[in-house]
Length: 47
Image 1 (cartoon, rainbow, N blue to C red):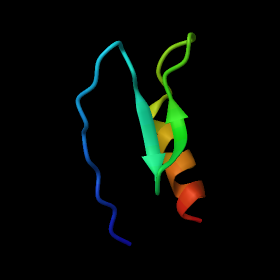
Image 2 (cartoon, one colour; image 1 turned 120 degrees about the vertical axis):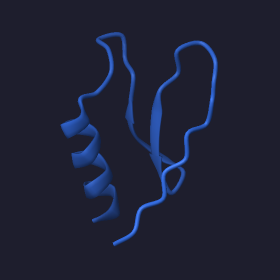
Image 3 (tube, rainbow, N blue to C red; image 1 turned 180 degrees about the horizontal axis):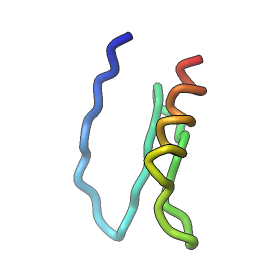
Image 4 (cartoon, rainbow, N blue to C red; image 1 turned 120 degrees about the horizontal axis):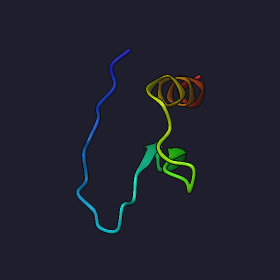
């Protein structure tokens, strides 16, 4: 399986991870998701 990642510069501390236009991980008041959380959510979305 091939995954293409794109870094899109933004403002205001926004951090979103999207798969096919759907947000699967994001920065919250508690902080950033861990690498393991991001990988898990992306894998789940690709199912």
